[in-house]
Image (cartoon, rainbow, N blue to C red; front, side, top):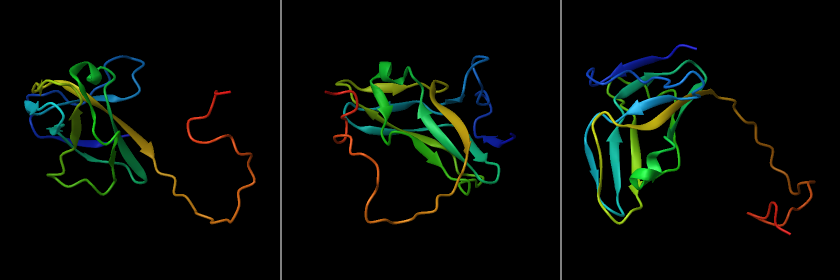
Length: 143
């Protein structure tokens, strides 16, 4: 699969797989961003992306992001295929769950990019589902 990427700051690397077995490309913060304790900050990820037809982008936190006291504020980011303008820079919404202000440095790897195919769902509304009830949300494995 081939995607087109525009970098806003060419002094930073293109997104890249950091190991041979990496599933996602690492994304870098284009700017230094101060995120105050208990608040949300937005880190520009230095890329605008033209996705292949019928694909979408998933932006996830790097697994080490929590060590900074940060998590993705929206869980994951979803990049639609029509978010592809010249100035449509991807950003990470980061929530600082710690009790101290945190600074993301310019060039710090903070997020990961996966590109996945879209499979449109057809919805059929029913009055009853035939599956067995399992006991409610969060009940798997409980006795």
